[in-house]
Image 1 (cartoon, rainbow, N blue to C red):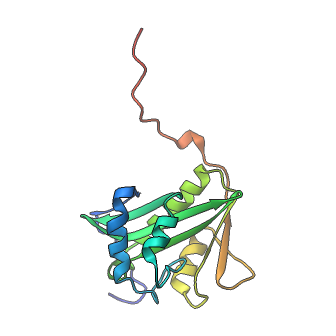
Image 2 (cartoon, rainbow, N blue to C red):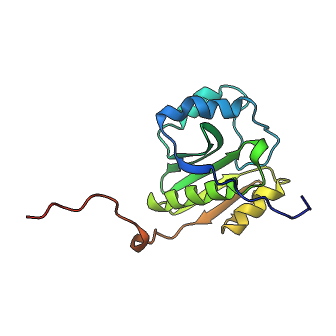
Length: 168
């Protein structure tokens, strides 16, 4: 692949909300996760299971390929703001999975009516900083931090999937 060319997301990679049943496969992704890689946020080096359990009350999303989790993202709300993080397994980076995960996390933050979200990465992580900027994030005073002011969700775009009321 030439420099600057971007691989397309494989059609079998899906983004969905994580459930409690995903805990084991999320942990499996982090077993050999390249911490020096391109991510927003950084998973801890130890006590990964404890960290995952601490995120259980926050909206979590996974990117899956077959039955394997290849990406994980979340928003942790607090007092009208929220911390966001996105991790993509190093074997599948550069395929647009991080963009899709981050866009999903941003939408969830809007639906939670958060005013602002923020994330952190290493200041030399140009790929993630470029991705964050492309989705509207701005650099904070701290070079490792960025933030995004959120507008309320466009309620007209919501699709109601509940069955219609029975006819009288």
